[in-house]
Every structure is written in C-alpha cells, then in structure tokens.
Length: 296
Image (tube, rainbow, N blue to C red; front, top):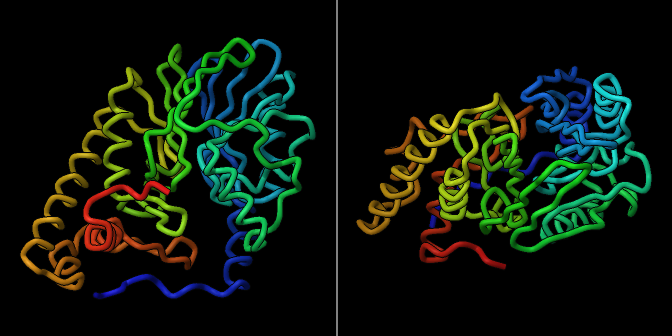
C-alpha cells in the first residue's frame, strides 16, 4: 500500500519554525461584550471575561507568546486569569502555559492531558512544568459555570486528535473549535493519526457541532466562521470521503485517489512543516480500519 507520510523535519527546523511563529504579533478581536479571540503566535486563543476572573481558551505556541497573551488580557480587564480551557494538546495551543501564573485551574479532555505528557517526554517543542499541565479533566462532556459564565465542554470522539474538546458558550452562541476547524494554512482538515485522530471522526464531530445553536465558530487557525461556512466545509469533505470510499471499493490505489482529488489533497507547508492531507488520512484509515473511528 502506498504511503505518503511526509518526511519528518529535523529538530533544528522545528525549533526555528517555533521561534519565528512565536514572534508573530497578536491581534485581539471582540466577539461579544465579554468574549474575545486572539490570533497570531500559534493557534487562535479565546478570552472570556467573567464576574471576577478570566477564562483563557488555548495558550499560544511558546512561553513568550503566552506572556504576551496575558498582557492582552490585562489590556481588556483588571480581572485575573483564573481558568484555562484547552481545545487539544498540540504545542502551538499549549506551550504558552509555561508563562501563566501558578494555581490556575487548567481544564482539558483526559486524552489531551496524555498527549501533553507524551510531548513533555520528548521535549520536541520544549517542556512544560507539571503545574502547567491540566489538573481538571473530563471524558465525554462536562457543563461548567466559571466566573458566572456557562460553558459546555463536548467531546464527540476522535477528530483532529483523540482528545479534542468543542468549547461551547450557550448564552453567547459561540463555539471555540480548536483545530477541528483550522483553515489558516491548509485547505483540508488536519488529522493527527499519531495522536489517534480520525477522518470519519472529524466528519462526525463537525456534524454534531453544527447541531448546537451557535452562530459563531472560532477556528484553531484562520478567521472566525459562520454556521453556513462550517456546513459548506462539512459537505465538501463528506463528499470527498464518500468518493474515496467508493474508489477503494473499486481497487484504486492511494496515488490514483490523490490524482483524482488533486484540487483538495495538497496541504501546503506550515512554516516548512508539511502535514498529510485529509484525503491521504482517509485513505489510510479506510483501508486499515474498515471505516471505524480510532477509539483508543
């Protein structure tokens, strides 16, 4: 069977890329009276101002970027950061926690915490102190009221990774999706197979996410999206997935599938780090796992 997995970059390449990425300026955008999102220097982050404290969603790519995110929070409100909620464990969303104050409640899916512990063991993007790892985890879903703000933390199964959380603010009708939705550098969904992500799980998760009465979707990378824009992406990649499944049934190879899907398969390099396309991951998983999500 063909294998299109990209060649691994060197450790030096990764560290240079992280340094450049972490130096990007931050831009903060207001969504609601108490809800903001911040792009630049890693994945998109959320800032939710509560009654007496602030809830931050995702913490940027490196310690310095995390420090600058906290400075942006201080420009918005004098309330201290009390909680952090993580959408998943990728380094570009969590490594800024190294500069966050001690004693915070850090909330994540249990598999997100496992991914962060595994990343700490390798040190590929640096190492977080134990105090910066999640100290409040959940498995399927959890409803919380933090600083007077209602949150629904939802896990619909493996998607971008095995530990994704959809963070839904029901009163504001806002969703922070993390990299389940991430269009800042790739035309296709990014699925991390090494973290037990799933192509069919991505379709399921986005379908379930669209059932929520939200009208604003903060992506992990790229601009905020409307419900209709997210629906268009789901329709596009459901069609692609079904076409790939049909081609496999006709005995087509990965090369033939990628040639047929040429407009959608090439995910461009992110700072020189090339990631597999949705089509290639779907092909691998359909042929290896017979159309079942990677529940591990």
